[in-house]
Length: 240
Ligand SMILES: Nc1ncnc2c1ncn2[C@@H]1O[C@H](COP(=O)(O)OP(=O)(O)OP(=O)(O)O)[C@@H](O)[C@H]1O
Image (cartoon, rainbow, N blue to C red; front, side):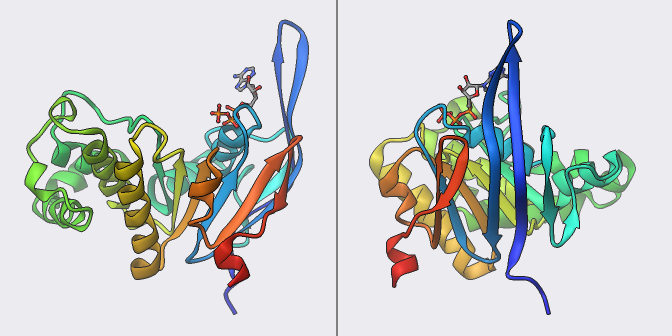
């Protein structure tokens, strides 16, 4: 039987060293990310949320502890496996979108196809890739802005483009670091609504990092980061 937890961290420690002083950030974090649900990691600024997200994305490695994706150890997997995990199994969304300014929305959405496979196979499948990119832009309600560059889009539109890009490789898991943090309340709510809808309709697992309790309340499962540890925090949906 498949585990209900798609991503797990056990006893994760992480410190930074600055001017010979060690700054402990994560002090033995345990987390079980539930498959097909919106999982919020909430905590005040500086509590270590982004640090944990970087570890879950294998963008950095823990000092000690273990991270498992679908039951397989990922944090110390060979580099090729970690690259494949980042390029295919997960999609990442950032507060400031991280779109390439020279590229249009559709070219930004196509970018993972050019990184995740050889350029040769990308060009062989160029027509299919473009069709999929159009479908992903349509999925997030942005097809009408396909040819616009980031400077020609609103914040909400840029985040929609970033979500479409993250969906391009059909990931199992979406990691979102403060996805509404740079948006006004209404636009933030529409982006949050889109993420919840994607989770419900595509059975997509979402890990959403936020400092905002109200946003965390939209999640199915909620963890609170405090003093370098994560504790389960009841959310309204969990209680339901
Ligand atoms: N590369 C680094 N070198 C030294 N200290 C770091 C580094 N990155 C983060 N820190 C420190 O680690 C702590 C946690 O940072 P982190 O960015 O993970 O917090 P956060 O909860 O995501 O905060 P925010 O909500 O403000 O983004 C902070 O005290 C920060 O100053």
